[in-house]
Image 1 (cartoon, rainbow over the protein chains, first blue to last red):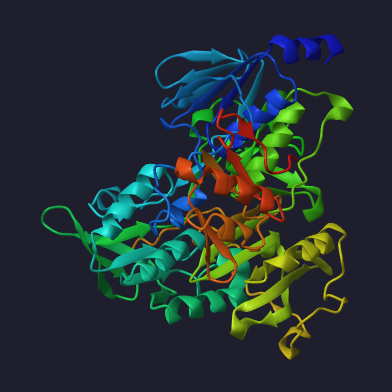
Image 2: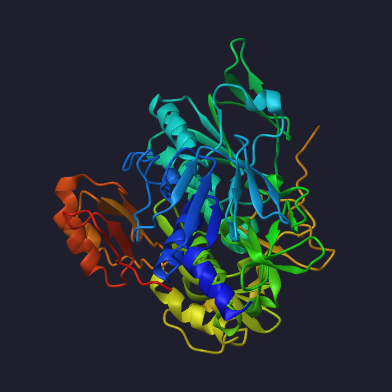
Length: 463
Length: 76
């Protein structure tokens, strides 16, 4: 692109951002902060200004925050046209137009796709409509769940023991509510952190009074005569009475609106290069369509250039900033999205944090503390390198491990650590399930060229 | 006033929970819970918490009475 053209784009171009949540907002702010003076439009299917989601499964359920009042703070004025409450329904790449649900069309010079994900619904539609069957993704979902929990249900049943499900179960126990949680794998968090750490999460849950059922799937939700859910049927033939069921089976990427557009978009997200430029379906990079946040799938140099889809808060912020920067830059001024994957969770009073890509690790070393004490640091290794670390109530060490990942430190770890126990002298298998078997949908999805990688294939039980 | 804490950065120093206990609370040993939309009378306390955070993890807007936004966390 000529310097003139770029200058004109920055001065009077039209940038459209589809998706008005964390990534969309931070991208808009970055565009303005970096001098974009043209027309900026934000399109969002929810009728609300951008709000934060992590509190919805934590402080909102515990009553410390209102689920309807988690709006994100603004870093600066963005002077944008907001099209809220209207979903994008189509994209015409050739004409550079976004079609909206109300029939309107919005033209762009550069487009950012930040449509994120939605909760995976219960797969039997009729059962999903039963009163008391919930998901947790939007603020309305959270408000509905808060109302139901306050009403004092006899038992809450959580389907899927990933982070979101475990956080809901933890909040229920804190509220004094009986709760059952079913997981197809052998323990909670197995998809994200492996079986060794998963067994710690299992102990935590059961010690706090969660009726944890592993190696089972839910086969049916039973309603009463007036359409309220009353019981959950499991694959081991057991039946659990419950009046609130929280379906926590991961998420679906919001890419349907791109079907037929010619972009490389599908159930795994929208593929893009490290500069956040979307690929078309031929694998050729576009130069005016960018992607950021949960819906993006981009190669990461630190992790073998695998395409990573990261449903992480910090990734949404960092990728939005990089995408926005690159949208109004050219050539060597562009930056790669090299954010170190990181997330946090909190359950049963324990703070869980991670850096890197744990599911890539085959082996695990507990380098500090002890699993039994629920305060430890675990380091994941892959092909002789440190690729991830996880802490339970040990967050202050994490930055050190991030540096080890960044410099490709050898695994098993050679450095001495504070509070090393005998159990941490040798690596053990990390205990990730066979990636060809479905789980509840791990928070980090490794997807790449290998045909053996089928992590996003979902096989709900149908017996 | 709206606020958000980058919990990737947060290391549980709990300065915010001391300075604005009605807005920030430790939950367990190092988890932080907070109210993203505190009442206006908390403004001074929140401003102190934002300034005191050792890892600068708190972003808030509406901290000055004019309502202009304040950048409290670093921009990548």
